[in-house]
Picture 1 (tube, rainbow, N blue to C red):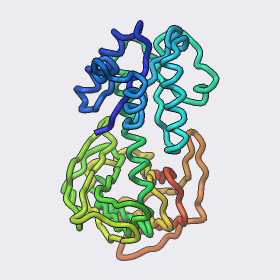
Picture 2 (cartoon, rainbow, N blue to C red):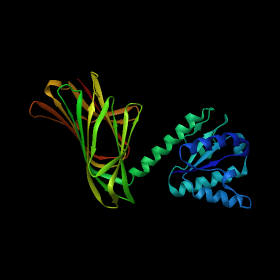
Picture 3 (cartoon, helix red, strand yellow):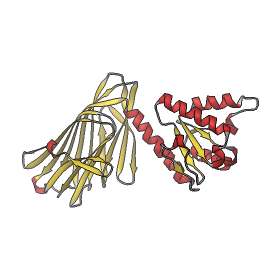
Picture 4 (cartoon, rainbow, N blue to C red):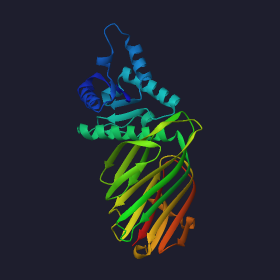
Length: 314
């Protein structure tokens, strides 16, 4: 459970109280001065203790807040902690029509437009992305072999991922596999782990969280396999497969295996950075076997959050 510190000035208290209530509904542990500082407590020491124990500081920015000496102290302390932890700690929420001060200009902020639900969803999204990044920095993928085998109709695809993971710091117990497709995902099986949750977002992104039989300790490796079926996922004349690596890989092999009765006219792989795509066709190998055509893409040394798109035409 993440701990969230609410930094604000008293005039903005009604808005902040509403945020506290909504965050607690989402099971966050929220620190608010009026609830956390008891009569007789040192205000300064209580705030310092709250900041030291926090994972995130929600900084409510308004004209009055930037004039508050208490808010200034909290911002200074939070920036110091952010530098020490080498991580994003401060999440600014701008509640006035005001420009961010210079020391916060490099930070993306949330604009409060009286839509509490949207703001809470943005906060949750940031925390989930950061959690995923922190978890994935514990491991490297020694190898990933990903095979998509299409049936004669092209409507049923076997998805098979064989992976060797190595823990490089701390311990690693949970792993999340992301599959981005239209259509259905059925009969999910994972070796050496049990499935904890399957979350579908926007009817396209499916995140499968699994827990290892025993935690993976530093310098230990594990071989794992994920198998499932993709149903009615690639019906359009122009299709693509999107894959994003949330951890570093030493090597990755992607295989597309088609029946000759339903083969693509063209297929290529691209490295994706925002709106820019760079074709890397030199990584492609083509072979024929038992009335099937097989395209193999081999990529070495993928970086954190690298994205690849494989595009083809039926």
